[in-house]
Length: 111
Length: 116
Image (tube, rainbow over the protein chains, first blue to last red):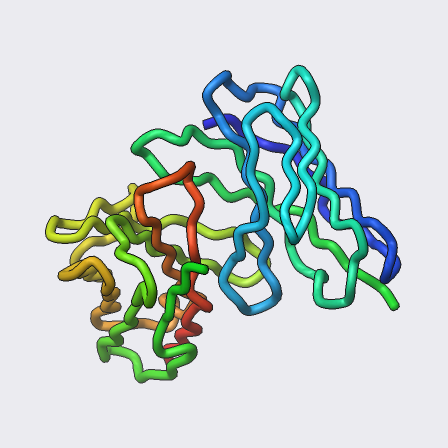
């Protein structure tokens, strides 16, 4: 599975949009981009995933570049409860569901 | 939505004892469950993959005789840390998938193990 590169940490003001980047330049054609987040001392929580097209759900939007080498997770109106570590993972959606977890981006939403 | 319950959320035990952690999918049948371990300020490390009715597949470096995994039903998997030692103190997390869809995992809340 391809590796990803994310900034170690980011800050965001409460109520503003949080844009979390992820580079995955070695992604292959059948690999999806997944985003999970982990609030301190809890299990990870699925946020969103996509293959080629931009995706939106009740939690966030996922923007994938046309060449698929990078993506951005957007939290449109960040709240204090969005403070967490955000993981960007690329993986094949085949039988092997093993996801490789990096260190993610630690997002701090400030009042 | 899919819910995974993990119990206990925290446990303290003496060195040499065994500890069992349960992972249950509450509203769906989990064909596959995963067990992870996470040390402070580190990422999740996959320990093993558990499929209902078959032996678990362990990752390299994980002792299968020390970390016993049982997946006897489509809604329950257990991890038993046998003869626990202080170095086994960690945050243990399970996740489950229905097998449908693209790798979307539902995680339990985690179990904090402290071995004295």
